[in-house]
Image 1: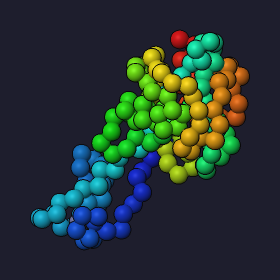
Image 2 (image 1 turned 30 degrees about the horizontal axis):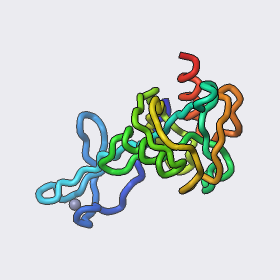
Image 3 (image 1 turned 90 degrees about the horizontal axis):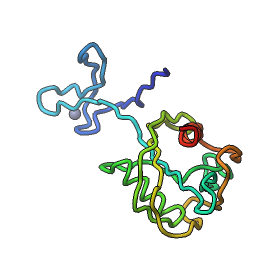
Image 4 (image 1 turned 90 degrees about the vertical axis):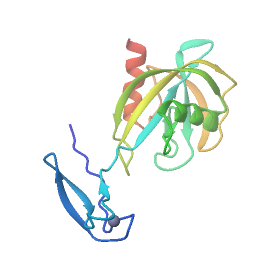
Length: 174
Ligand SMILES: [Zn+2]
């Protein structure tokens, strides 16, 4: 498995002081050199994303995809998805993105699985994929989706994110 390290800071983001390396349980972390007052330690964090599988009401083998209107991967296809915001749960991010990108309101989401998503050029993420088991509304593109369409899961168009493709395959093969 690839090891990821968080981007490095030059100064303490809390007090502006210098940083030092400290060892905790055998691992090295960046920390504020003011260990008396500030005590800030840079634990790093894993960026999180969430995506939703919505099946076509008239054909269970088809899923809703959005054509990306923005970079990266503009013009390629993806599940309705996005970053989990600070303080948000992945399931709430999934529901929010579904509403923002395609105007669908999910009333029931079930987790399909979690995946390491490494396709994004700027950051990896821990991707949680959900299945919308109950929802209302008809998909129409908005926000950063330029187009929406239903595709058969085993003949997908050019997909932006490999973690999503793994999730789709797992979902239909189970
Ligand atoms: Zn500090």
